[in-house]
Image (cartoon, rainbow, N blue to C red; front, top):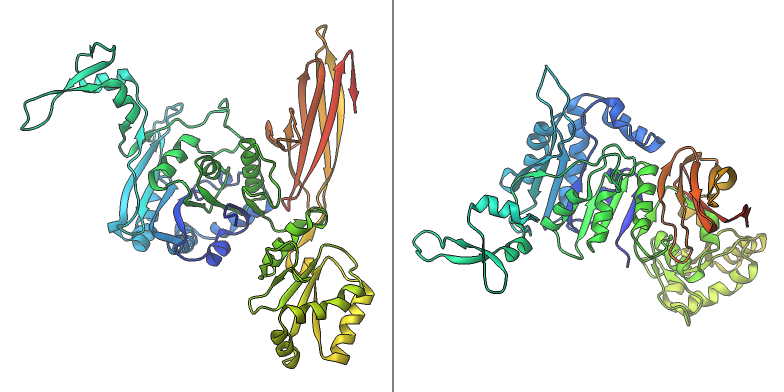
Length: 525
């Protein structure tokens, strides 16, 4: 079963529902207790709502807001698990004393890591420039699995620290003479290539540059953390296959790095844009086209697109909706006797991925339910309980009338369940793209303007563009977050496939593709 999950919602509600002692590593970068305007990053409704929750009072309210969440993080951590909490000078003292020491215990404090990120210094007569964040590192117990991280270093750095002459052996390998240590008189050869391969042990000051506007991994998220920082944390306190949790996923760096390092992961955020941007970053680094049922991860939104569910693979939908209903799906695709799953007490479930389910379906269902488990069927009839459930998008009049007849004449209760009773449904945005030629040159190149226009009852959040779209590889955005839906590109002579996605405030999306031919004239297929 897929464990990787990207979830839109309040992390407190989601943490409360998680099983205890199931997570190996938690990294959280909660909103800092700083300037209010700075805290609004994405600007969508979910983020604004969360912002208001934590800013109702001063520092005491902020600490109480965060502590309630960290309490559940402590609960879901395995005894061997660790937590890294990212903060800055505004509240780090309160966070350590009032939250982490109280919940984890001072004896489980491992490190106060200083992330020194540098960047341009500004002259300030009132204080020294602040150029670092704090990352508190705690283990849940003494059993925690921790591997001291190492960093790459150059030959020049190594030689400088050792202050030794470099020698070359007969095979051309460079080495220094290393003192064998106290009480030992004999020195030994220390080969430089072996040292560089192993890397150097690091201390608790991590000098990792902050991302600049020109960095390739930059996505336009103001507080985006560099991948190198998260890679060091994840390698320090987890192994391949371990489960990583980030309850404030933000720009998605933790999830992207965890996925790349073959860890399982759960990412949570209350912002639609945060969740969808994270999904798009995952799509950038995978060769598989991700969808609602992809093996790589599941995406959990407030609402689900009717068309995607209604016309997707029937067998996959059956298993998924049964699980959403709280049941266990039937893994057999054939020979299931008309039953697609069962509830926790064994009552059968049948799924019809269709609208206006007919009377004929209800006519046959009691027989299938009794054949599935006769004793349970008789027990439910005797106790006035449903003998089974039929799930569909909608039911015709004949089906409803037959259910009423069965109950009245035969005391058999068949419960009809519409999909929108189980999960909230909506419609994905509609989208159109206008293509305008702005200029051309003698070499056959064209400057093209693309204008995407989308509509949704929920409102459009942003657009995303792939200017080298290959359907077999899936959508791999070059521009992840475009708030206006306008892009300009210079296209060379030949064929070009372009794709644009529109994302609405429910997190639902639509994809539109444009095929262009640039050859003397601009042609759109």
